[in-house]
Length: 197
Image: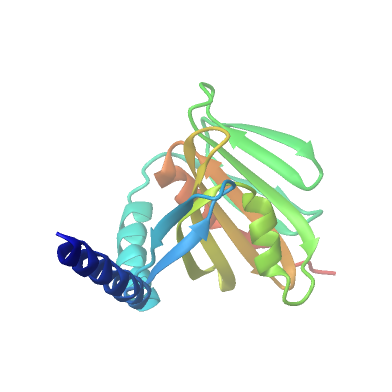
């Protein structure tokens, strides 16, 4: 009995490092939550994720068949398309919210201004707060580098999609909840307005 117990303990001691190595080698990353507990987030290789996600997203985004209007913000040099039946609210010169009349979906675009060099990561982490990251992807929107992050909001218990777009050194954040197809379509319609003098 004692020998069996010792062998079981030895097996566990050997198995833990092996399992840990296999999990790290397969792209699983441990993310600390607000409490000491850990959440495992599976991150497929970027080339697999970008190819499969981009193909699926581009197909679904093209299938949006609702009438769209264009919102122009000439103060912060951007434009974005939104469904014509959604309501638009400018809550500050740099923050505009678009939402349905039933509040079942909402998109907020925030122009944060100049992005200090090498500060995108800290801005993303600050913006996410206690949200748990589900997926993260680098992509290009209207020729500008962007990060798309899908997270779970602990505060509201719903999924949120955020796009961080670096347009000529200025950071724009598009975040949305609800109708994900429309949120994605709006984010992909973002474009910089070139000033002509």
